[in-house]
Image 1: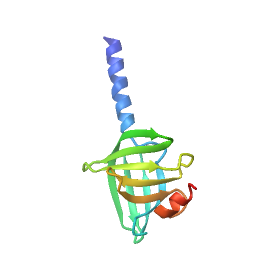
Image 2: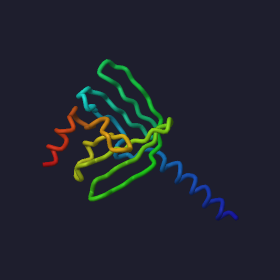
Image 3: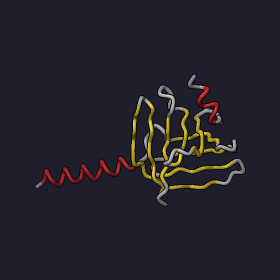
Length: 128
């Protein structure tokens, strides 16, 4: 019986840990939307906030719901507490400092970089 309780406790702990966001994308990012508006995005383990150029901040709660690696391209799925789903895509296999935050259907919402605001076009020029 004790083994079953330990296994159950381990399973619950593993589940709770897996819901937190990956350390790959946690931290501060500089985001640019398709209209070239600039944002600051800060991912924490279970929440993130987006601050626009005027200093207005919006916070969101999320859980990570998937991890995919395909041809060295990494994708992390997140689901907001209101049900919306997004993907954090790292299109350059050797670089986890630049990514795209998309809707689940692949529509880009922000290009994000650890160091500077870059556009979608600039992101893919970096891969050449």
